[in-house]
Amino acid sequence: MKTSNTINELTPEQAFHPGEDLKDELEARNISQAELAGKLGMKRSQINEIIKGKRNITADVAILLEKVLGIDADYWINAQKQYELDKAKVNKKLQKRENAIEEWEKYKDKIAVKFLRKQKYLTGDPLEDIQSVKNIYNIYKLNELDDIYSQPRFSRFRKSEKLNVNPVNLIGWVKLVEYRAKKEKVDTFNKEKRKKLIKKLIDIINENWNTQQRIKETLLSFGIVMIYQEKGEKTPVDGISFWRRQNPAIGMTLRHKRIDNFTFTLFHELGHIFKHLLTDRKAEFIDLKEDLISQTRKKDEENEANKFAQESLIPQDKWNQFFYHTSNFTDVKIKNFARKVNIHPAIVHGRLCFETNNYKRRTQIDYSIK
Image 1: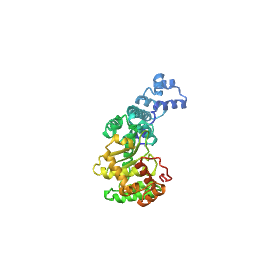
Image 2: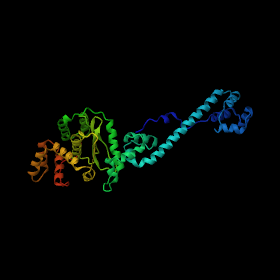
Image 3: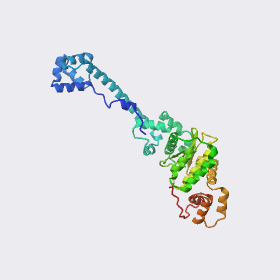
Image 4: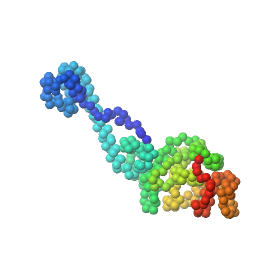
């Protein structure tokens, strides 16, 4: 995002020496440099150096110019002072840009440049982009990026050769979600309203119209921040849950763009909130695709979040009755069961695929998020 830059606003692109004004005056009056030099008692080369900005207009010269040209000495003295000020500002601005370029080149490999540029948070100008990175990554200096990469929650991705994860993009995604979460206005969180929240969310999912926006608005009204954030390359992440000030927060990528995946990821993150974050507000749960989880975090926490999601959507006893006492799972039977337990049929079919480890089951059930 573009940030205000006081130096850019107050500093001219270049400083103009008063010798340029002198040159214009001589040309307008058809006076040669040699002629002016003779009247001022100076060498022609000295007048030429003033015109080219290589020599300053001193107070003595300003007084003589007033006599010859009729232009107040104060004008020439002030013009010279302004030139010196402008030149100092231009040099300072140039030095600041040079420092920014040097700093950017040193740390750009630890910044998700392509991802953040695609999300329009970076412009390509190091002066602006460094400030944007500091805001997003919540740091004061770019060298603090080293500390972020050494944090246990991120270092595992950097060190592992088995994970097909781009740690720069992953950290960039996490930091952008955290940054955006800080800017959201949200109501007071009350853990006692969990059942009411779950019922409301399930109703919205069953209705399935303007689903993502309605889910976000509902969560905010219950005190939970929701951020939908596109992911970058090699960032196989589905969601994240963490504590933001006085409220829990969820980030989701919508990686699969299916109602069953969307719903399960949402309730999985809610599981982390109600099962883990309430007792440990410093924790943060980054949920990658299933085959990476066992390599990155304790299975117990994932199993608890999965169980919370499954039982919140379909009570285990009702699922067992359906799963173990039904033969030939047709779309009609799936829809009848979904109606009975008040859940979207795509979620029933999705769980059936998971339980049978068969994700190629044919179905006419609509999985789209509307």
